[in-house]
Amino acid sequence: MLKTKSSAAILRFLGIAFTSIFLFSNPCSAQTKSDLTNCYENSKTNPDVALRYCTTAIQSGSLSQENLANAYMDRGIAYYTSKDFDRAIADDDQAIRLNPKSSLAFYNRAIAYNSKKDFDRAIQDYDQSIRLDATYSPAFMARGNAYDDKGDHDRALLDYNEALRLDPNFAQAYYERGVTFKRKGDLDHAIMDFDQNIRLNPTYIDAFNARGNTYRQKSDYDRAILDYNEAIRLNPNYQFAFYNRGLTYYNKKDYDHAIQDFDQAVRLDPSDSFAFSTRGDAYDDKGDHDRAIIDYNEAIRLNPTRAVNYYDRGICYKRKGDFDRALSDFNQVIRLDPTYVAAFTYRGHVYLATNDFEHAIQDYDQVIKMNPKNTQAFFRRGLAHFCLGQYDLAQKDFAALVPLAPKDVYDPIWSYLIQTKSGVDGRSELQKNALALNSKTWPAQVMDFYLKTATAESVLSAAKNPDPVAEKTQLCEAYFYLAESALLGGNRAEAAQLFQKSLDTGTPNNVEFVVAKNELRRLKSAPGF
Image 1 (cartoon, helix red, strand yellow):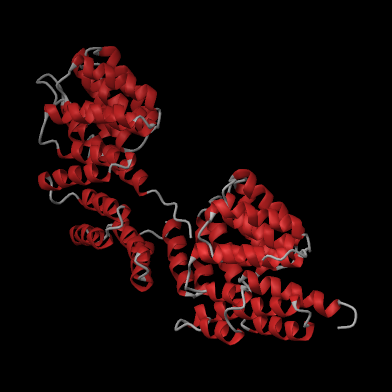
Image 2: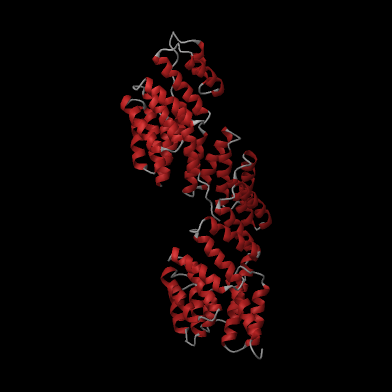
């Protein structure tokens, strides 16, 4: 299942929000009336109150030019706090007009542009702020954020380094640099920076969450869980930590604990479509497809344009054998994102499972066009050609698989069947492949059977498995391959019985099941059967 929620994006958003505490305002001078004082004192904490006092002070006509600039800057902070970034910028414009040497006015306007994702204009203002005051470390850090969000991670690191040179105890700069190292894939340096942030600010929950995400990316799941635990201890309502801990349990295949954490994530934020979709993944992988579909439905209701939600639900419907609904969901994915390779792949699988081999081939053609190394597409397209009796085309697809998947045991078996059905003795090539693979695990016994070094009974015995799901799958395969041997030997009645036994395993998502159904249909429609 695809997991597309971007923890890195969430972390950087929180970083930007926290950098806003550095929006700077000056206390009023002696000449300033109480309106300006109240404007300043409420600008960050009570913006609605601040806006009223700031506006009164600005319109009073009694402020000096310096204090008028401060009043505009403070009102800009209040607008920023209210997320009215355009008005914040307009007030910073006025503050800069009145005091063009105010590094903090340029800095505040840059923060507002940054929040609007206008990173180029933000960087221009950060440049001016730094030109006017090259000792203000938050400006370097904030400019680093802008460069990082533009994708220029190396330039961002230079600014974080300078911020930390100016202030070696600047905890937030360590955090932001850690996020950038993580984005670059330098996970060890990211962890070192999160360590420093936590040393300086041991209650900063975002750093624990970010370090947990980094450990999870390194597949150190237990260490990640410890960090999420600490974040949740510090703030029991921290939704991101529950969500990310749930993902970590999911990675460990501990679906019950994952679901418990996703439950908490949903409770804390019922509008989070990611939490619903990933909880759906956990239910789906547990085999509770109906419960998974309920979560996918909610994820789609919350975010109807997110293609992966339809994709995940389509996978779930396919697992249930509800191919019509699966097809509808994969169609929707492709409408939303015509480059979604996996949707074409699985739509092809649905067409294959419903004997619509021509449409299956068209979808696999598209997959191979977008990804010429997609082994699933070559394999399944080869099967579709096989089912249509197009053995020469099938053989070409399986020949293409040899360099792409040299250790796959199934490919040589299918290649042997295709060659034999084409009238070519494929045993010598099968013998060569068997020696090269030197496999003792399933389905190597099928190769031995075709090479006449194993019996049908030994094949069926090898298909047994302590896992009942795996055993059904392998018995479906075993009966199918035995049936093909009988069919090649001219024993159509035995082949039909064995194909039916393959179908009786009830595993419609197996390719052997799909081909067995087609082979049995062709047998029963043949004259004289």
